Image 1 (cartoon, one colour):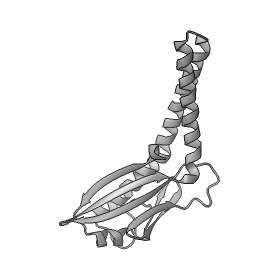
Image 2 (spheres, rainbow, N blue to C red):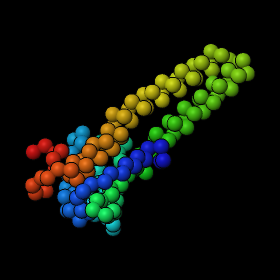
Image 3 (cartoon, rainbow, N blue to C red):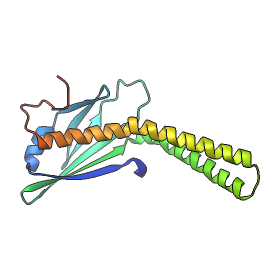
Image 4 (cartoon, one colour):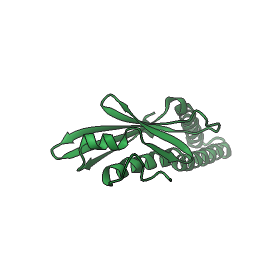
Length: 167
């Protein structure tokens, strides 16, 4: 779903080959959930291991695309919601949109103003709660994965140990 896709572009002085060497096979742990970096064609994928998760979580799948530009490497990090997770947020947004449209129509027609204001209030409350939940969940995962990739590109570390993963 396009509303939840985030793309960021960075330029690093490290070569594409070195960046891939640093990232491939590494893991990052975010909110007690393991994400693994896998090599897929010409890009890397950072996918969650959510097989054991029993709670409902909205998780990103992140792709990292590299391209050499002179003596720098351009890195495009794109996170998108898993298709499995996109149905609930889409239905909630659609439901809120219908409530807002209905509330505005009722207000314009000068009918059922209490019902109209109630619909608008409920819709605003749902959107606010949904936004807070997404910021502390899905977008937090996206932000921390982006920081993970940047940390690998900007720092020197020994072996295959992530600078963001606790020992």
